[in-house]
Length: 177
Ligand code: FEO
Image (cartoon, rainbow, N blue to C red; front, top):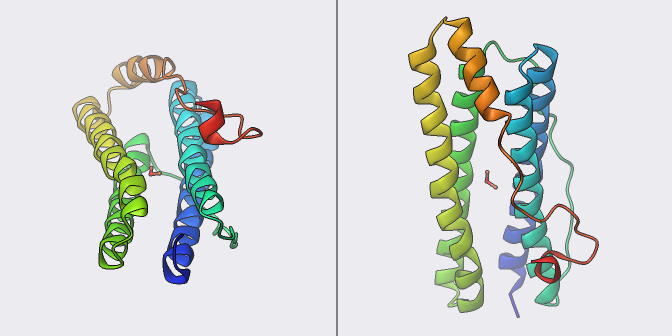
């Protein structure tokens, strides 16, 4: 059982994760357009991760016997000036998501909702990894600067990233894991 306010907040988080997926999908499309297929791959893998984050919440709300309510997803930006700008925006967005997860956790603690606290712990840890990944790539992009050869080497490295989350949600996230 989760109460109405907690349910609404979790539904709100589904929307934020879906927006995250949409944002990274847009960055993937832009990367492909400018010939950076490795960056396009990295962001499309990130898209899958975000869909997985959204679906975990979706499933949790349903397993608690509450109703999933989907809201409109805001349009993401479509133009980016550089890979560094994309990753800087990604980090800023992930920091926003981290603070949103922290707010959810505070709400669950205030309500003595232990099940939701335990559920959210996964997201707390995941956000540390998300921000770390972005910081690592930002640091590399700053070293690369205007060196096109080095940028293409990083692009090749990022082409190796593979999705390691469930991407078929037809049977549910828990069942597929
Ligand atoms: Fe779902 Fe990137 O946080």
